[in-house]
Image (tube, rainbow, N blue to C red; front, side, top):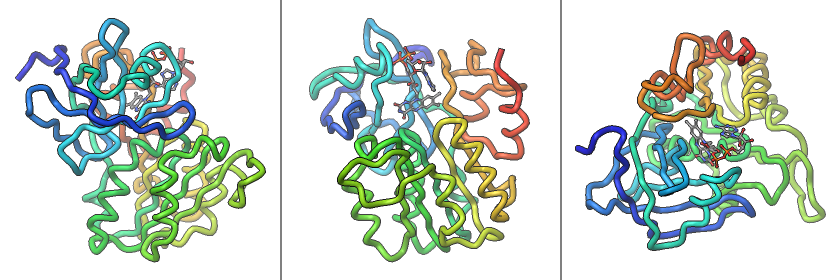
Length: 272
Ligand SMILES: Cc1cc2nc3c(=O)[nH]c(=O)nc-3n(C[C@H](O)[C@H](O)[C@H](O)COP(=O)(O)OP(=O)(O)OC[C@H]3O[C@@H](n4cnc5c(N)ncnc54)[C@H](O)[C@@H]3O)c2cc1C
């Protein structure tokens, strides 16, 4: 095993442009030894000579490492520009997982905002692949505009399936959009699930997660059955550097997935 701060080389084998600023990369390990991640975990992805950033694994059910990355700054721009054949460094996987096992026998409500669908995708795929282990399945997804929607083909296919309630919304429509307009928490009221039996998994901007949790609580989902993934910045991924401290916890070590009754008091405190 390499030292925990030493990145392993992974080669880009496929690159798909998802939106104007987001790509999905499929990577294979140069060593041939695959990286096994659980739904919700992330790696530290290194663009050599530029920098390293935490990125969630966006598919965990195959031999390749899959990441969906939005270009927002120097490192993510460089990662997104990587073409097949390029080599990136990978450390991890790190962090805990979505409660896909605890959710068995329950209704599963997945609520995503923007790039937040990427960390939730492995949980969604797990539920779909083990559909008999769960009761109702719900996917609520919102993005700023239609051109920001991730995995559109997958979403369109899912929307035709009878065994999942899929609802998509955008903050601002364009001329071609015929779907919902408004923020994603507004979809919770009508979604097809039984609050007393549901587990919710939420990922998106913090403000979206807060309003989503409020809407779920208002429908009767207990705070101990709402889980949210925190995507604040971090450096080492190993609990050494302290950059991702959240109250008495470290997001890289104790998260990124938190139960809402534990998370809510921590994010209520303003960052210094
Ligand atoms: C556990 C975890 C999982 C993540 N998973 C993904 C993922 O699957 N796909 C993906 O595209 N991104 C993901 N991110 C966010 C990603 O790590 C940041 O976008 C990245 O670090 C930005 O680095 P940069 O050098 O490109 O941009 P920077 O120059 O560092 O930042 C550019 C802009 O983005 C803001 N920013 C930076 N990091 C974050 C962040 N974590 N949250 C919100 N705003 C930020 C900065 O304040 C700045 O305005 C994840 C973050 C964490 C902590």
